[in-house]
Length: 313
Ligand SMILES: Cc1cc2nc3c(=O)[nH]c(=O)nc-3n(C[C@H](O)[C@H](O)[C@H](O)COP(=O)(O)OP(=O)(O)OC[C@H]3O[C@@H](n4cnc5c(N)ncnc54)[C@H](O)[C@@H]3O)c2cc1C
Image (cartoon, rainbow, N blue to C red; front, top):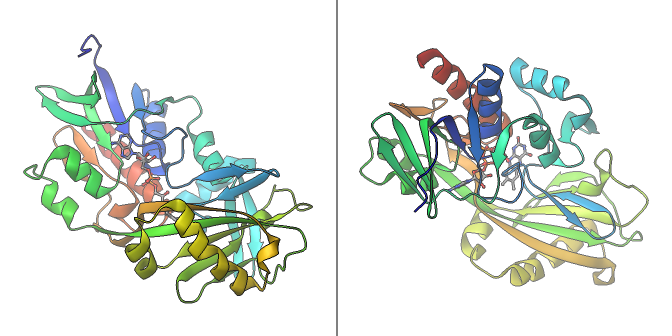
């Protein structure tokens, strides 16, 4: 086991909007921060997939509709990294070139280690030891911005925060990304679905994306369908959802060029914690799930953690 490391000030686990907004505020205050994420890219559930034909599709968060001055200010500061998208019910914002691009922009200048899955945690006298497989990284302060079930698994069922974590409920979701040829119908841009489809969006109509080629659609299944089918192989999920999409937009099977499924075990917050974070000693735990189902809730959780950490240490 590699233990030859110097102690870092703060380790933030999770490079979604919560972790990055927290790390950014800490770094701006002059703190030394290391962000660890198991994924290959920054963004977490603000996720973007590139498919052939220059197709860019957001398979997690669809767009941002700010509800608080703080989040509106962040989007304004982000400038071209958060483009306005006029919809029938108002203007929303979309990360550029995809939703993950906004989080990547916010992470500029931060030390972020990708493909770094935290496998175990151990308290130290003056901080925490974070295990990445065989590798140990120590920090005086630890911030976890991962789903509550995963935080609980890492901390253990007898940890002081375990009960609070287990009271939060999150719902799964299955996403279909589909590419249709140019001749396919485009009856709407976004729509709440019916039956198993909770949401349908013509993602290729978002700002900054090529408008002259095939159309890209993103479909999200409703919680009941997702709970029953979440363990099926991706091909089987795509084969089930693609015909539902074609029916909903009035397109024929021959229009379908590609269909790819993705599963989110912890997609959307159903029962939030009701406060911006949990803390015990030098450990803070947060995420969207503290306050609600939106990226904006994660942003506020991350900010609140950073402010609390700065005030105490
Ligand atoms: C299908 C879908 C549609 C959505 N639509 C919208 C929308 O339109 N608008 C909106 O505002 N919100 C939407 N949301 C919610 C939004 O995506 C989330 O609120 C937000 O992205 C949560 O950010 P977060 O940083 O709290 O968590 P996450 O983005 O989930 O980040 C957590 C990170 O922790 C990492 N991680 C987990 N475990 C470990 C570990 N052991 N070691 C290292 N890293 C780890 C993960 O890789 C991940 O990157 C949607 C979500 C989904 C799934």
